[in-house]
Length: 246
Image (tube, rainbow, N blue to C red; front, side):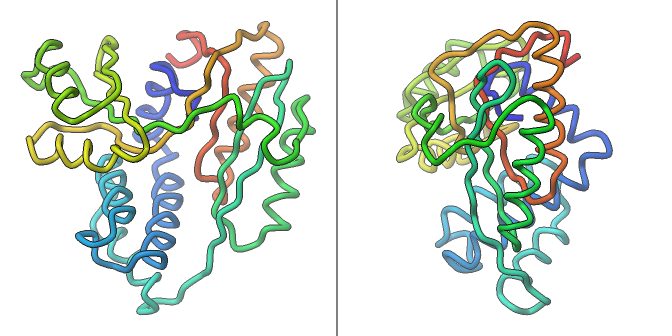
């Protein structure tokens, strides 16, 4: 879930340690296939592929899985053509939700996404109905406890031409423009600074709070969306209470 706050990050880290690991690998594998078909199998000349591989390794995806996905894209193994789709809609209490998918069957995925929204008190909307509430940013999460002080991280973020550096309890969050994201990621990589996460995110301008019953329905909607193999990312503007992520 990419509501983009520290609590959603906690949930993502937990997910990587349980049964959701297989689904994470499936989703990243699709991203690798698409990246290879768009820019070729060499990460040194394909920045998008290099970023996805970095994401795969941050999620402890085995090299065999990564290489298998690359071979699928190049035709060495049986391949499936995936199409990128974006859906926008309203969750409970008018919350804003953006769903990004990679699918081999647009009709199936659209029908399933619509069902999830309808089933949990929301509605699928038209293109651009909520996207104006979000801004695309590069997001790099760096764990604390790696010998880098907060002052050091501020200096690193300046050197990396980042827009901002936000300190949380267990990690630093570096924000960049989409254009500077890859160079910033490479800066931290070349300086041997470990990254828990490095990707382009959609960040809401403002968060909203939901009443308990609406929040319960909202979380069920997000869980169903994220459980679908076709769906890569789910972005929203709901403030999540910490207790819901513990």
